Image 1 (cartoon, rainbow, N blue to C red):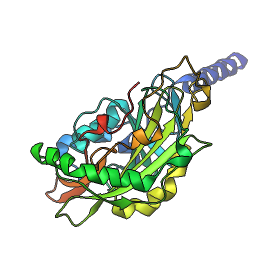
Image 2: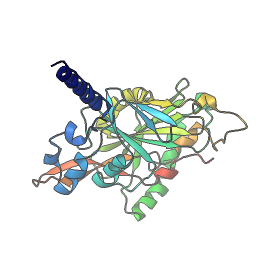
Image 3: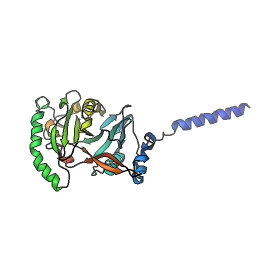
Length: 302
């Protein structure tokens, strides 16, 4: 009897160790949003359900920074994020997209705002001009460039965009080394306006770009959330802004104002409406992203 009990205890300990060391199954969209298949045609439902949901702290890129998502946000990263942008949202491919961040409880299907995350090492950006930036003058310069940009958009078969005005208060956070700038844009003839909100968190060698994708109705909520979104970014030790070594590290041409580029087409991603056919024949409006000129929208060159 004693030997039997000993064998049973050994077996239980072995099973406990096995389960403790076994990797946890990844959480997927199918787990988090089980009714998703009711809103997608069959060819999209399978891939959507398999998208891996990431929470907590994510180490991004090659260790340049972390995303500290906490319990308020979750992310799709890498190929999953690009599948949403390119296949679900019918966007042009962009291999520089590293993650899509969503608020907990929202999904790529419900029209809520989300955040596209990029990281560029184009050289260190000086913030010396932070206290002297004239955002209204930057806005007017951008407006003056729109006719030519919209001519190019028409030739490319892409909807025109016209700047309506600033949203919230643009500015630079000297502690977080983060610049925020948000606009409302519109396409002539359309009844709704686009939200184009960005935050750039400067690093030793470049910046993390948080590009909020939404519509005008999201403007006040996004403006209030931008400082919180900046706090999601944790730069790795050695890659923080203050780790910059003058005379050693590459420096980008232009300062903070170079990030703001020019013209309505060149600040980041814009959400516009398309219809995805629901598998039962109804229509669902979801965001689709125009990336026209995004990679040259004011990225400084090293």
